[in-house]
Every structure is written in structure tokens, then in C-alpha cells.
Length: 77
Image (cartoon, rainbow, N blue to C red; front, side, top):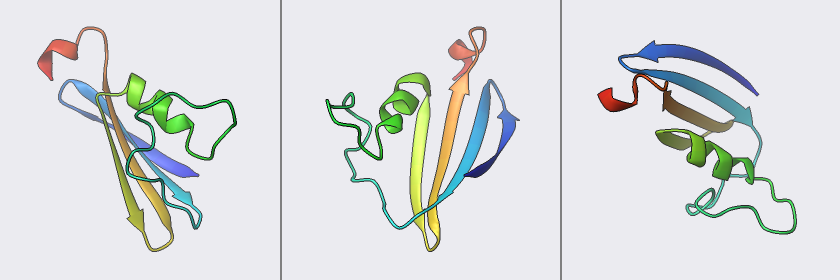
């Protein structure tokens, strides 16, 4: 997995790119992980901590874009 980070007004953004054949189902990350570990369990944590999570399937894997604000910047979003 590789990625980059940048700042936008009031938030920090992080882009991640993961290679692999599987794409998460549309509902992935909206409920806590179950008893058995699953390949997309980390999405729940990302959705819990971030202001927004975008997931896009591309030819060679997944592209994720996470945005989160700091304590003092939350009211600007």
C-alpha cells in the first residue's frame, strides 16, 4: 500500500492506493467488525475516525481518500 497526504482548508487529507483483486461491498465499514476477521474490517475504523471516506475501484486495485479535521478545525468543515 502506498499513499500521500496533503492539507486542505481545515482538514488533512490522505490518499491511499492498495493493489489487489477484491473490491469492498458497498456496505463495508458501516458496521463494526464481526467475530471473524474480514478483509475490510479496517474500513469501520476509518469511517469512525474520518469526516469522509471515498473508495474507488481502479484497474489495478483500490484508491481510498480519507479526510479528517483537527480538534480546532472541526467547526470549519
